[in-house]
Amino acid sequence: MDIAVERSYPTPIANSPLLPLLLISLATQRNAPKEATHIRDEYDYIVVGGGSAGSVVANRLSEEPCVTVLLLEAGATKPPLLNDIPSLGRYFWNTDIDWQFKTVPQKHAAFFLTDKQVIWPSGKGLGGSSLLNAMLYVRGNHEDYDNWEAQGAKGWGYKDVFPYFLKLEDNRNLDYLANGYHAAGGPITAEKPGYEGEIKNPIREAAQQMGYEILDSNAARQTGFYDLQGSIRNGQRCSTAKAYLVPAENRTNLDIVGGAWARKVLFDGTKAVGVQFDYQNSTYEIKAHREVIMSAGTTNSAQLLMLSGIGPKDHLEQFDVKSQLLQTFQLVTIFKTTAVSRCLSH
Image (cartoon, rainbow, N blue to C red; front, side, top):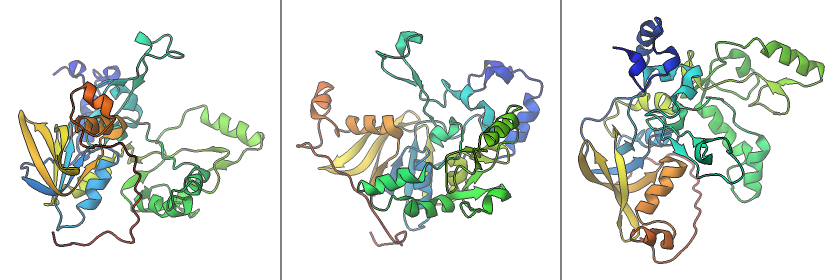
C-alpha cells in the first residue's frame, strides 16, 4: 500500500523507506484504549467528549467499581501511529483527527489568509487536543492562580492546585525531581525531548552572560530561560488517552465509544437525564442515572448545549430550537470535596 495516499499520515515522510520499521516500532506501544463492544441502556454518568479533560473525568469516575460510566467521543478511538512522534504534531492539523475549525473572517488581521480566516486546530479523537498540541509541560505562573483566588475562586490558589500538579506527574528527569516541585508515578509523563537544536547552547550562554538565570519553568520562579519538558513518554507523545484511558480500559464499569456523534442532551423538565447520539448508522438515547458531563471542548460543548435548548433564547429561536429554560440566568458552581465519594446506594 502506498502510505502517501493515506490522508492520516504526514506526506513529508510518508514514502520514506524507514516508515515500515517506524510503524512496527510504534505499534508495540499502546496509544489508545480498547473500545466497548456493548452499550447499556443506562449509566450512572455519561461523559460527552473524550479529550484532555474528558479522559481524566472518565478515569476518575470509573475508579469506583459500583458506578457505571459511558464515555462518548465523536472522533476515532485510535489515532494514526505516526501521531506518537512529537515533532509531527502540526502535520496532523487539518486531518481526520482535527475538527478543522476556522475563525470568522477577521477585520484587522489575517490579511494574507484565504477569506481572512485563521485556522483553529482542535483535536478530534480520544485525547482531544493532546493529540495535536506542542506537548509543552508548563503549569503557568504562580501569580495567575493566586489572582484567581483573590477574585473569588477559593481553592484555586497556587498552594491549592500544586498538590494536583504533583499527583498527575511522572517526571523522568532525575535532576528535576530534586527541587521539590516535581513528582514521579503519576499518569502524565514529563521528560525533555530527545534532541536539541544547535542554536540552544549559544542562546543559553548569551542569556547567562546577560545575567539571566537558567530555571525550571515549573519551580519557584518563571522569569528567565529554561529547558522545556514535554508530555512525552519514552520519546513518544503522551496524550491524555494514553495516560488515563489505556490504564482504565479493562474496567467493566467503563464503556468507551468512539465515532459517537452527540446530537443533544435529553431533559426531564430542567434536569439533564441522558444523551442522544448517532453511532454506527443508528441513533441511541441513553439515560444517565446521576449526571451528564459536558466535556466536548470550548466550541463543541457550547454548540451541543445550544442544540439541546440551553443558550441565548433569541439565538435558539432563530434556528427553531426549543429552549429548556424560561428565564435567563448565569450560574457558576465550584465544588470542593475532601475525598472521592465512595459507593452510595442509588
